[in-house]
Amino acid sequence: MVEEVCLATGALSVTLADAGDNPILEPAPGATPLWPSVTLSALYEASIDPIDLTNTLRTELNAPDLAVTTEILADRVWEREWLKDFKPMRFGNRLWICPGGQTPPTAEINGTHPIIVQLDPGLAFGTGTHPTTALCLEWLDSADLTTSRVLDIGCGSGVLAIAALLLGAQHAHAIDIDPQALLATAENAERNKVTASLRVEAADRPWPADCNVILANILAEPLIALAPQFAAAVKPGAALVLSGLLAGQEGQVIAACAPWFAMQAPRELNGWMCLVGHRY
Image 1 (spheres, rainbow, N blue to C red):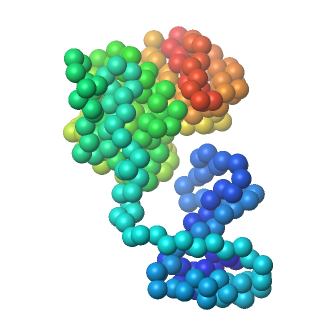
Image 2: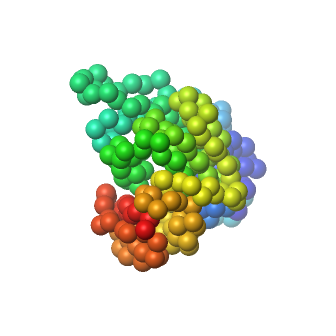
């Protein structure tokens, strides 16, 4: 109701945010789940009088004690604002994730041969800043991917598939349920000149059956459900890299994969886990 009244009184946009600590980790595409306690922010033209607007909102909502705060925002190129906090990041010894146009600090790459992924996530998940992505990128940096065929499940921005190709993989197949992720992955592939080696498809398409590496940075529940499909998609000896699960969930995921994969001890970063296994 508040959102509708804000839009009716001239709001250019309305943003809903968690006012407590109840994270929604991965809503389905098109879904708009709400938290138990919500903060609503509405953006108006600078010409709007905040006192008049507050009075109008209280009247329209029949809420004389409605809590309203206002602030003036200087105009910016908002769709690029995130770049201020996104700097080149190193994972392992040589792998770097850089926002478009940036390069690693010279002092940190002297004496090495850096592998640089130029990245713009758009509206998709995956910059390397989240522990689940970081854990997968560190594994990729340490792996011998020469001639590998990689399946990236829940590809988001495409960062894992693209990194694998730049690190020596022969081919990568990236899938996701979110159309924005497929768009971002295709654009980042072009940005990194790996389009010819990368296939990008919706998750309901058939998976390949000859993979050497599976990367799945999603959530514990789908990881458990997909375990038989992981097994069917890889050759004996293939690596399975699973992330997106919270500490305490690793036992269930390991048990689900154990009939087909020899699972190693989990790695943890800031409460998030990464599992690596190999196909029997």
